[in-house]
Length: 199
Image (cartoon, rainbow, N blue to C red):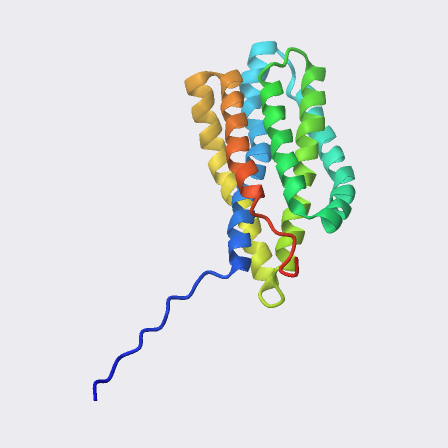
C-alpha cells in the first residue's frame, strides 16, 4: 500500500487584511496632501515675496473645513460605504494640486488649499479608518494601526519626493505630477473598498 503524503494548501490572505493593505496605501496619498504644504512654502514665497504667515492661514482653513466635514463624511460612509467618498476625496486632492499650480495671489492659496485639500482630508481619513474597524473583531486595534502606518510612511516619502520634483521640474509642474499621482493611486484602489463583511 503506497502512502500518499498530503500537502497542505497554501493559506490565502484574508479579505480583511486586504482591506488593511488598501487602506494603508490610500493613507499614503493622504500624507502626500498633508505633508507637502510645508515643502512648497519656500519656492512659492520666493517667487511671490509673500510671508509664510500669509500662506499658513490656508492650512488653518483646511483644518477647519476638514474637521467640519468629518462629521458629515462619517454619516455618509455609514449609509453608502467608503468607495464614493474616498474616490471623491482623491479627485478633490488631484484638483487641488492642479489649481495650486496656477495660483497668483494669496487668496487663491487660501481658497484652493482650504477648500479642496480640507475636503480631501476628512473624506480620506474617516471613511478608511471606520471601514477597517468594521472588518475586525479580534486584532481590530492592530488593523487600524497598520492602516494608519501608511500615513506615517507617506510622511517619510513626501519630503524627498516633493523636493526632487521641485528641483527637477519647478514647483508648478511638481504640483501637476502630484495631481496625476493622486488620481492613479486613489481612484483605482478606492473601488476595492468594501463597507463591511456583511455587505
